[in-house]
Every structure is written in structure tokens, then in C-alpha cells.
Image (cartoon, rainbow, N blue to C red; front, side, top):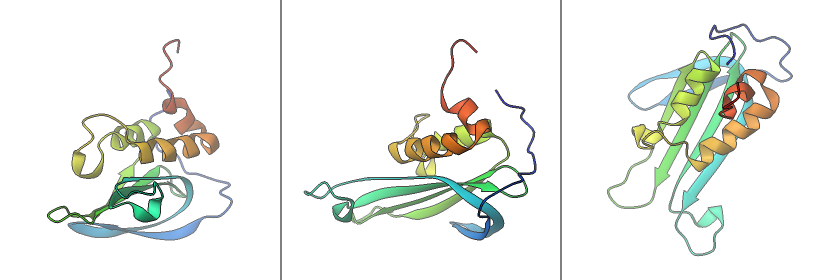
Length: 140
């Protein structure tokens, strides 16, 4: 596993200022670069995302100052089910992996959801630290 210290990231191709909302807390503002995103949902009859009646969108953003921010927006059109926004600060790839398995409102029971896996795969392709935790290597 990579060193657990947060490091300053240099050489970003396209850093921008992000403002991420968080239910029940102040928004986060930081500079960084989107390195992974995923989306999943269910419902509807066509199989297309435009027909989903509940879903989640996940983004992994690498911070200029070091570390990552994981954002998650979840929504539902079902009566009694809500939606929301989360943004978690993750100082290391291992911390990011841990947050990916918690799901919206902590409901993934330690498993990584489909949208989170999609975002993890994208991020691992461009970030060596994330690549080192994206696969459970039994021979490492």
C-alpha cells in the first residue's frame, strides 16, 4: 500500500475550484481535478438512466493541496424516500477506499456500490495511489 501521508499534488492538467454541498454541514470549497465518476440507478422500464426513479452519482476529485474528496448525490422519486448530498475529505487512497464502501447514509454494509466501483476504476487509471488500493492483491 502507498504511503499513508497526504501529499501535495503537482502537475494537474486542469484544476478548478469546486464547491460541494453536504447535507447538515457547510459546503466544501477547494481546488482540484476530477479523476473518477460513476452513476447507477434503478426503476423504469426502458433500462435507460433517464427512466430511473432512484439513483446515485459519485465523483472522486484529487485536491491540489493533496488527498481526495469523494462526493455522492443520491435521489429518489419514491414517496417517503429522500435524496441528499455528501462530500467526504479523504487524505489517503486507503481512506478513500473506506468511504467508497459506506454508501449514501452508510447503507452499503461494507460493500462498494456499482457507481462507486465505476468511479474507483476511472480514478485508478490516472492515480497510482488509488491504483494500489483498487485491487485486493493477495501476493503483495
